[in-house]
Amino acid sequence: MRHDIRVRERAADGVRAPAGPDGLTPRTGTRPVTPRTGVLIGPVGLAWRPRVLVVTLVALGLALALLVASVAVGATALPPLTVARALTGGGSPTDHFLVVTLRLPRALTGALAGLALGVAGALTQTFTRNPLATPDILGVTSGASLGAVSAIVLGGGGYAMGAAVLGGTVPAAATAGALLAAVLVYGLGLRGGTQSYRIVLVGIGVGATLDALTSYLLVKAQITQATAASEWLVGSLSGTSWTSVWPLLVSTGTGLPLALATSAALALGQLDDDVATGVGLAVRRHRLLVIALAVLLTAGAVAAAGPVGFVAFVVPQIAVRVSRAARPPLALSGLLGAALVLGADLVARTLFPWEVPVGILTTVAGAPYLIWLLVRHRKEMTSA
Image (cartoon, rainbow, N blue to C red; front, side, top):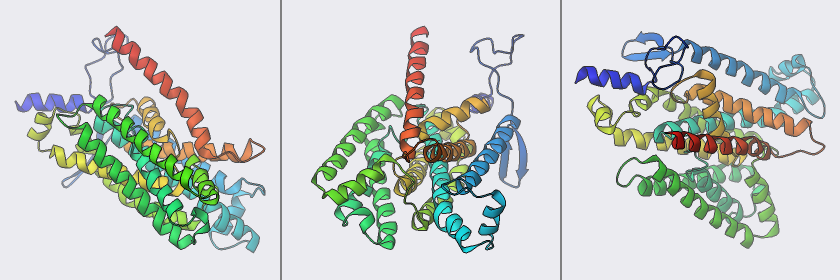
């Protein structure tokens, strides 16, 4: 029994059968996953695969380079040395104003929002064992959007409100809306067992209902309120300030370490419920924790930057393919999400005669990928 559990643990962690002469496993036709290495510090094990570690470091370098470029590039281009001086308190007052007051909050908001959405997408896809189950599809983003729009419309008109009031009200309302959506989807989708297709279908229905309520609020709102809410709903980094950064920094700084701490439990969660319980995993508590972390990260990102579409869906699947892992690596997914949002924002600010909201570019890039994944999944189901 113990040997059987150990074998199934290895299978859940992505360790497949030995490769044949062509480099592919004989039964699945997939390339074998390199066994993980790591260190053991007391009761805490830090494990990684060399390829995942290398790709993660590359993604970290890319995200940092795009962060610097986001601060340096604009109507007035600044050399990296000028940016560094302004960040350390030197340089002219104009440089300090451009870097610290105007551009750095926008760049940090984009990086943190992409990081949070990437990790949230990896959590939900791993938890449901379904690449389509992201916060966008499961209705969590729609719930956060409804909460934030309610705060904007019912609270007096979005950006006309004081920055301090808006900074406290919108994140709290977005979190409450995301939590409500998660409770509905979890309660309705997991009745009778963990069937991922049922969760996806329930999430689509809950998301559509919440989107309808959001549209109703926009129709009934005054023109100034509807304009402010509609601009926010597109998913944009324009107009962000330090009041947007701090709540997002708190939610991401809280949720990301907790999410990384659940990595081992996520691997066990890929097993059957009975086997996972037998090796010591509290399955129901683990699921609730994963959902809570995904809600926290999604709500913080949506409250700061709006519902930036398809980031939580696309980057975990890209992370799986570049790392050749069995499930989306959390850190890699977050860094790729930050790079995607920062890169899309750079393109939106530099390659168009007018500023295009970043959510439009991420949706344009992610929608074809969703269609391709659905077609590929259909072919696999048909051939099976």
